[in-house]
Each structure stands twice: as structure tokens, then as C-alpha cells.
Amino acid sequence: MMSNAIAEFGPPVLFVEDLGRAKAFYVDTLGFTLGFEDETSVGLLMGEDMFLLVTVGSATDMLPGEEVERLSVNAPSDCQHLRREC
Image (tube, rainbow, N blue to C red; front, side, top):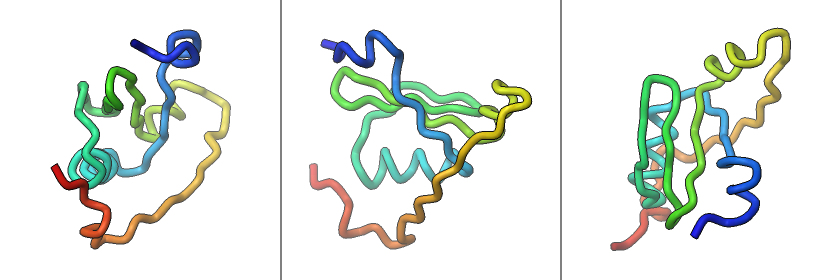
């Protein structure tokens, strides 16, 4: 069942510079399930709840005249220690 907060406000959105790299990290390294993807976004599942990865460029297109605040998180290129065991 979808959590009340997500049902009320919609899925959380993370804005990313590199959609392919972010998708690979969340799916391949952390083990999230891919719900959907298109050119500018990816939907990832955490059980039945979804969150979105959206490119920063598409976000600025959606919010004309508004600056998108950025938080940079750099994951090490070798994330073997984070890989989920299935």
C-alpha cells in the first residue's frame, strides 16, 4: 500500500545531472526496481512506493524563471562494497 505522504503529495523527486549514471547506481548498485523510464526521467520502486529521478535540464524547463537548487553527491566510481546481495 502506498504511504499516505506519497499518496497526498506525489512521489519524491531527485534532480540529477546524469540520468543514465543515476539510474545505474540506484538499480545496479542499490537494487531498486525500475518502474519506467523516458528521455528525461526514471521511476524507481521501493516496494510499492515510487520515487523519480528527473534531469536538471528538464526541471528548469518545467519551472521557467526559477533557479533549481543543486546538491551535489559524488558516489565513488567503485561501489562494489555497496552492491546488494540477492
